[in-house]
Length: 404
Image 1 (cartoon, rainbow, N blue to C red):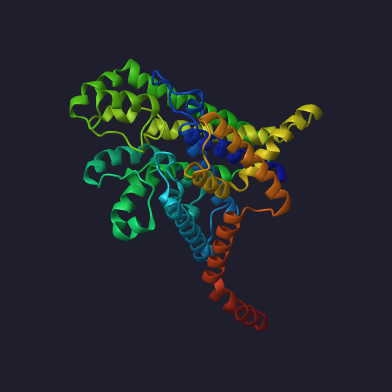
Image 2: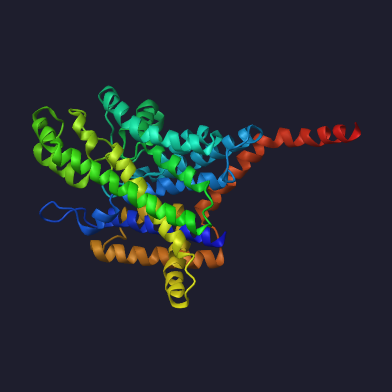
C-alpha cells in the first residue's frame, strides 16, 4: 500500500512541478518554437492531474463499482467535494488567466459528472472513456458555434451569479479545460485506480501501454496532418477562420485554449496541447498513465544504491504531491502577487524548491495539507449526512432479524 501510494503521490508531484513550469516559464522562443519546458509539460501536466483525479475517485470508492446501497453517500461525498473545489477555484477568480488559468472550477464540474461513472463496472468505465475521447470532440465541433463565446478569464463568484448558463457552457465545452471531453481523463483514472496497482506487472503494463497510446496518438495525428494534407486544408480555410495566419501557426505549434476552430474538420486531427481533440486527449492520457507506471515501478526497485537514489527523488515529490491542492493554490496566488519579482527561471526554481521543502515539512509535522483536509472533511460530513437515516434504522432491522 505504501509503495503504491508513494508512486501515485510522486506522479502528482511531477504534474505539479510541470504545471508550475507551464505558468512560470516561457512557452516559446524568439522563433515561435516551443521551449523545452513547454514541449514536455504543455498539456501533459494538467492531463496528468485529471487522470490522477480519477485514480483518487477510484480510491475514494474502495477501488470497485459502488453498490446501490452506498449510492446516496457516495454521490453526496463527490458533490460536496465538487462544491468545495468550486468555491476555492472561484475565490481565485481575481487572478490573471494570462498568468495561469485556474483549473479548479473545471475540476468541480468533472467531479459532478463523475458521479454516474462510479456506479459502472470497470469495463463500462473504459468504454465510456473511449466514447468520450472519440465522440465529444466531434459533437463539440457542431456545438461550439451555437454556444456563448468563452471569456477565458478565471471565473468569479460574481460571474457565476450573473451568468450561470454562460459559465456552465464554458466549464463544460468552451473553456480552457472543458469538462465534457476531459471526462475521458477521469474515466482513464477510475479504470487505472481499480487495478491492482501494487503489482509489478500492472505497473509495467501501465508504462508500456501508456507509452504505446501516446506514441500511436502522435503518429496518427502526424500522418493525418502531414501525409494526408491536413495542414494544407487548415491553411486553406484561414480566410474563413476566426484565427489569422500567425494565430493559426501559433495554435498548431503551441496549442489552444481548450478548443479548436470549427471552420474545417481537419482541426480535429491536431494533437497540440489544450485542443481537446481525440489525438490530444489520447496522447496526454497515454503520457499520464506511462508516468504513473514508471513511478510505481520505481517503488519496486530493491537494489541498494538505486533504491536510495529513487527514494531521495520520490520522497519530496510524493510529499508535495500529497498536498497539491494547497500548493497549487499558493502557486497561483504567488504568481499574481507583488512578491513575484523574479525572472522566469529564477522564479520557477524558487517555487519548485519551496513546494518540495514545504511538502516535506508539512507531511512530517501536520500530515495532510490544509485545503486537502478541508475538502476531505466536508466530503466525509456530506457522506455521513446522506447515510444518517439508514444508520439510524439499521439497528432496529438487525434486532428484528435476531428476534425472529
